[in-house]
Amino acid sequence: MRKCKIGIVGFGTVGSGIYKILNSDFDSHPILKEIEIAKVAVKDLNKKRNIELDNNLLTDDPFELISDSSIDVIVEVMGGIDLARDIILKSLKSGKSVVTANKAVIARYGDEIYETASREGVYVLSEAAVCGGIPIIEPLKRSLKSNRIKKMIGIINGTTNFILSKMTKEKADYKETLKLAQSLGYAEFDPTADVQGHDAADKISILSELAFGGKIKRNEINTVGISKINLKDIEYANKLGFEIKLLALSERQKVTSNDSIPLNIWVGPSLIPKSHPLATVDGVNNALLIEADPLGEIMLYGPGAGSGPTAASAVSDILNLHASSVKNNNSIDPLLSFDFWRKCHIVEASQITKKNYLRIICLDTPGVIGKIGDIFGNNNVSIESIVQLDASADEAEIVVITHEVDTGNFEKSKDEINSLKEVKFIASQLSCI
Ligand SMILES: NC(=O)c1ccc[n+]([C@@H]2O[C@H](COP(=O)([O-])OP(=O)(O)OC[C@H]3O[C@@H](n4cnc5c(N)ncnc54)[C@H](OP(=O)(O)O)[C@@H]3O)[C@@H](O)[C@H]2O)c1
Image (cartoon, rainbow, N blue to C red):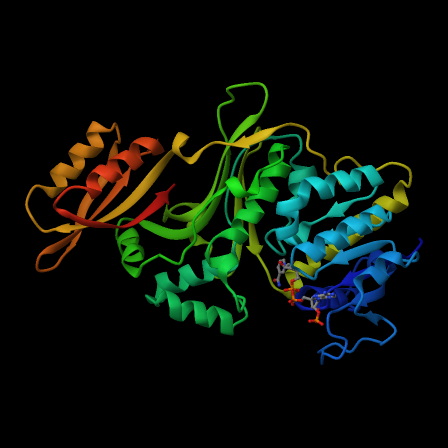
């Protein structure tokens, strides 16, 4: 078999993991030996690295890899957005397939990238971009293709799951836990994308496009992070039989026109019953629950990041490319590639139904619970439970969990509750599943 020559852009956590897999002598499939690293692009040629690379292999110009006609595949594991997009598009236009771990680029420029790949008759594969080592992209593109996906719900950001797990188990403070996550390498120096939910939104956007077949407007995904989660919410959720997790959800809604599939997509901290399969997913692990017809429900679970797991996903993509190029040089495999086949749109948040959790700080006076209950009742919001969980000298904390209700009605009730003279403020509002 002909060797497959790859050029790797980026030699950090993921890039060096790819090198290790391709240079390890474990009892691997012989096809792994057919992959050869031809060139590696880095930012700083003088940086001290744990893996010493031959100087002939290194360059600080990623475009040198693209113009090298001996290279078959570009592996983009550099990160960032604009330069990465440019590298991916130029690689595809020069007839090279691309493997990338870059969710930020695929979530924003997927349409342009997929379209360019198809036009040029090459592939862009991104298994490593979502949930690190867990095979998710490939199943959605191929193994699950005979199903109609109804719903996906997952814990798809390891950093926030590590923080929430630690806060739950050890009653640890949010800021301290974030610092610990940074010192352990689970959170980046700038943790914004993780803790504000943007990373999870990028990933659920990519998964939704693959599952439902239409372009998702990434900036329309309703995204809430975990930075406002309070230990009190975790304590109360636990008392009521729930865990709090940062969830990403994408669900097909009832079709109202033949034109476009309506989707409910959001990312946010949510209460999930302790008996739910996602409730036991702790630490940096990720999991995605997929509901499909006729399959039923499956859960994919495992390490959502890290050098080895993420690199293993990228190398699997390289192997798929190599195998497919050997098999068939003249036409692209329609399941390995990806093209949008219909239109989808995100339904406005006020139009969806949802279960909700609300923590209200109010004066400890008789009749408040009744007034809050009346407001919900008048707005057609049915309540699952309403309890007073804490009371100090003159202050009480009331926690309400609703059934699945119209979000517009719930928001109206919330505003009316907030204007009650007995209510000091609404301390938190979370989703429930
Ligand atoms: N880390 C994970 O667990 C994980 C999991 C899933 C997906 N990903 C994704 O994988 C990608 C890479 O992540 P990472 O954690 O491996 O990043 P990283 O450790 O920061 O490594 C980035 C690499 O890119 C190189 N680089 C940066 N700018 C460059 C430029 N202008 N030209 C050439 N090379 C450049 C850096 O060079 P120097 O070494 O010279 O600085 C470094 O080797 C990101 O898109 C990330 O979202 C990561």
